[in-house]
Amino acid sequence: MSFKTGLIKMAIKCTPNIMIIWVANIILKGIAELKDFSFDLEPRAAYVQIQLVGESETIDVWMEDFAIVNDDGAYHLIVQKAESNRIWLSNILSRITGKAWKIPEIPQLAPHLELIAELFKPENPEQEELEELEELEKSDPEK
Image (cartoon, rainbow, N blue to C red; front, side):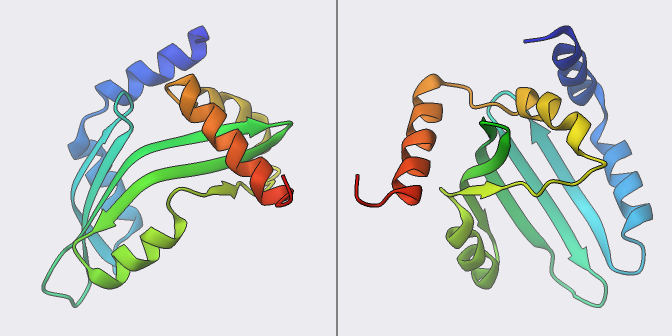
């Protein structure tokens, strides 16, 4: 792990959730209100509780075991587990979990993708090998 990545991880751990909620609510004003939030890099877990404007109930979303992998310069996001307290949203999340989703090449993001991939790289080598195998199977179904 590079010094830069270690510093970013420390900053993420030290950032109070209340600050993240406050900034998110400024951005989401008139659309939704972020009620609760937690994010932990080590177990790769995130939780969001949000209330859409005009709705009486909150929407809860849990994500676990996510990573960004670099495959010869192409970056992919992989989420192994995601669910929600809303059935329709859990059904959508079930369709995206366990698959490698290519991160589009955005010019403003391109210089930072390598650092982001290092920050969110798979924790264990077995997971990374499994993800590479899944990618190979998708690209060449005859193997």
